[in-house]
Length: 301
Image 1 (cartoon, rainbow, N blue to C red):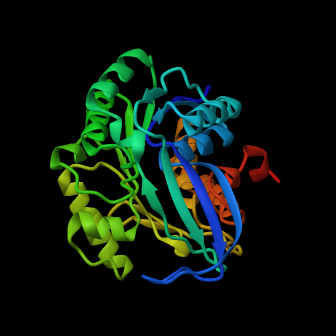
Image 2: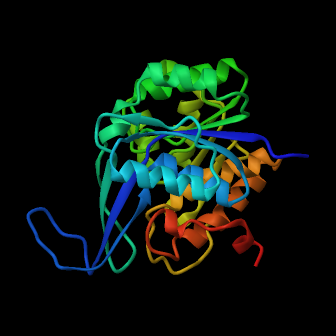
């Protein structure tokens, strides 16, 4: 059976990463070690991850008419993504500044630039032009109104709508009823429900609240503990693989992209989560964002 088509609508950034012994505290200056510049942005990361893992992926983003935008478009074409509907903006391309500590933790500052210029009108025109797709994967690094419009229009077309609500931002309640699969981390889940999530039972209770809001399915990423496939009493934790983390920057993006590939190939949600978990474990063993994303053959080794 051929793989279903995945459409990713989201952000594109140029990541500027500096390795440091420890992350700076407020007001502190620390000396860095290696500097790496590469492609990033949650939308782009998830699109590239899905493509490298075997997906049939169209990516739609908005970049500036500058060297960063030109380079991004060139790189996405090299990856084999369908880029026919990528938009250009009069604003600068998005950039992200990322210090990464010796133990693999990071903090990220994003200047959204052209990503913030991705309008509802852009979404409407894009979905008219893009043709058929089966799965829509969204994040929150473009305006929320545009995310909501994309989710609604895709839902009306019968596509599966997957939302990774990161970075966390207030969402209109109407949006939730368009979501087939919601993939927050614990902090994001707590923010959307107002519930504590300090135990697995509390995470499950918060998931139940999200279902009451209209979300049909949930997977909660739990960092080094893995992920929770929420199904009420039959919920299951998919444990993370035990590896030495070098950089966690794009692990969640790999998980989301991999999950959509698994679902596009007809895997069950559990099978897709296992596939995505294995891919994410490879990502954290490398530094950077898109340069750390694994290829399908690496999972076969």
